[in-house]
Length: 238
Image (tube, helix red, strand yellow):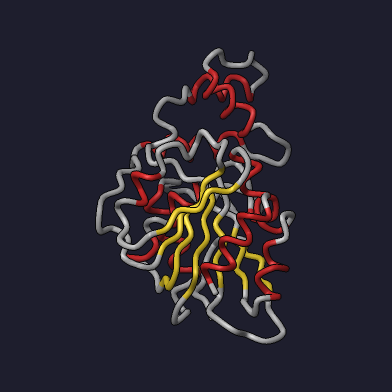
């Protein structure tokens, strides 16, 4: 069904298939289990007749840390290889997963695309990676709020601080620079009403012809876990 990939991938199958598989792409310093499985997404999608693919991004979760780049091009290349054997696939990305999913329609047979919790700007440009790594080595919490938040994220239990710091460096070396016409498949954007990360998401919606925007309750973490988010995606993919 899918090409060989180095990614750790969890697969869930429905009793009766009613549409193409759905690829769920998680956010930075998380993994597929945390973002998608604990929030009930495979159960909801398989009940709707969809096969579900839940990978861990490189350097995240159970996926290995590659010797090469952890930038957007390398990661999206790995995701496109994962689904290259499919005739079509629906993609749901959250946060960093959405920023990566923006690139997939030109590389993979994407039928419909959901981009949720995504920032219209490069989110890692102002992070002091050295200070975040110093905290990971037992140093003090960085004074800069953004760097402090990142420092706590990369040092959460089960995370690989060195790999995630390298991921930040490689991602911002290829900054997110969305342009009109880059996405030409049916697309739905989703943003939490209290999510500062997705502030300005309307500028992305304007770049995608026919795209819709749905607001759901919650901040960055709360929106991901809201039933309204799941309902908006299931309605769109149906």
